[in-house]
Length: 361
Figure 1 (cartoon, rainbow, N blue to C red):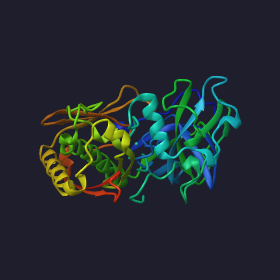
Figure 2: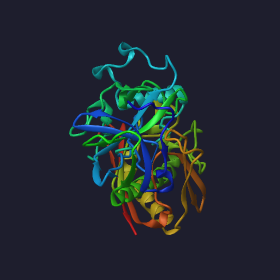
Figure 3: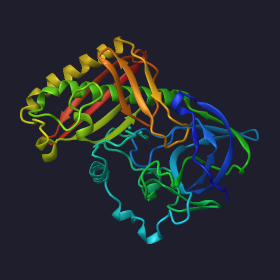
Figure 4: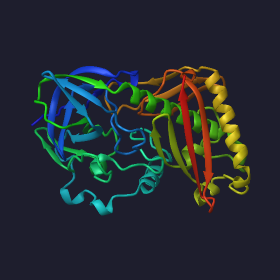
């Protein structure tokens, strides 16, 4: 069943919402099938930083129109021995929390935010990140079992993937969740629901702009040189403090941890509660200016593979801003007519939630 030799090629970074491709594999999932094609315009929910939701849409085959109810990331080991034994995979109860995974990434990469801030995948309630389909923790979603057999290896999804995104010994796959199986080697047409895609792209672009504007608004709250700066040269509060992020249609919800570690790094949290209104106003003012500038937005794409390291770039008046990103975006800030944020600080002062709302022109 489906001999996987290479990663899925994706066209969503260019803004594509339609395509035609050959079915590589199809395997059972709860209530349906996971269909893998050679090339797809569908953006999947990322397994490691599930910020932007997976695309929905339809696959057309043999005069049938099959609804794609969900779209997730899968991985298959390409080399013998790449897959750990069954008992080496984390049990459902032992899987790390979002914040624990975030801390682990920081220890190993000295980055507090994951490369694919994919607010993926799925980036949807406006609270913390939903768990990936593969973990079986999101009510109402189809769930691909932890290990599904393919001729080329074992397909894993969600928290069951034991390696870092992009590991060269694994094939990284877009899994389209359908109600029925499509035979392998058949050629199908793929169509993403364009209105939802545009709304998520608007939310994702506004989210990145918010992060940069928040860094600017909080730049004076550092008592010493921060350990990292953003692409515009300002202290990178966003990537140093991000704990969770979720992209929703026309917006995002981002949760920042203002704990002991951040304070040791030089961030001054004292008095933030009283200054929150000024910070919010400064962010909103900056967002309005950047939207008025109609700055070009683009994704740098080194290769078509799903796990390729892509960079979001925006030619702002202050300079070209960049962020690692695996999601989808608008083509210019001027495609937004408005973006505003609402900030809320916890009573204990150790958690800041930023809700961003955007409207398209």
